[in-house]
Image 1 (tube, rainbow, N blue to C red):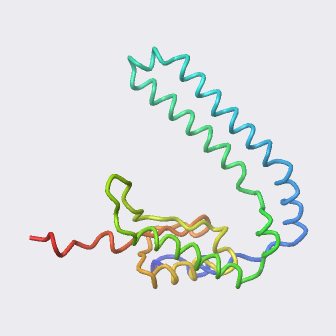
Image 2 (image 1 turned 60 degrees about the horizontal axis):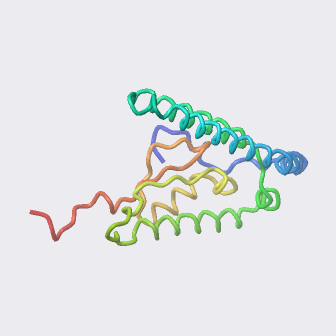
Image 3 (image 1 turned 180 degrees about the vertical axis):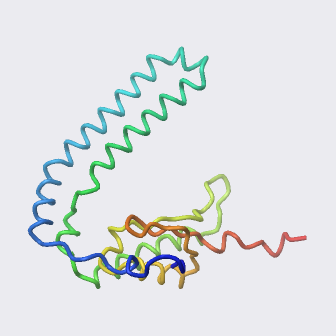
Length: 181
């Protein structure tokens, strides 16, 4: 936690009323398939549009970038529509701090295992940054997520705790002692 940030923001989120979660869950069950169909239709539209205008894209890199940016923007907006949705585990475990502690421990351990894995030849390097979304630490607060991550070797990045906790694998910034001059 940075010194200039309000410590109250790093605590657990207030428990939401059960009736509100139930209504959101029912709306999620109804709206999620519709959102998936709209997202898929948007992707297919941009794919077909891109294939039809491939001749223009061959001569204009700016045009191709514009189409890709428009597709990314549209798909991001569709994905953002689902931010209010409530999953079954969220409905069942709202207010259960032990559940959220286990979730944070599991997610941080998973990211730590990925980041600390030795790099394999001809494969992508292990991740050095990660984001833990609010849905994982909602019941225990961002402070708990940050403390667990710091204990496992992560560094805190500039973070908006109302959305996520961003972390950096600190071992990635160390110089290799064997190859140093």
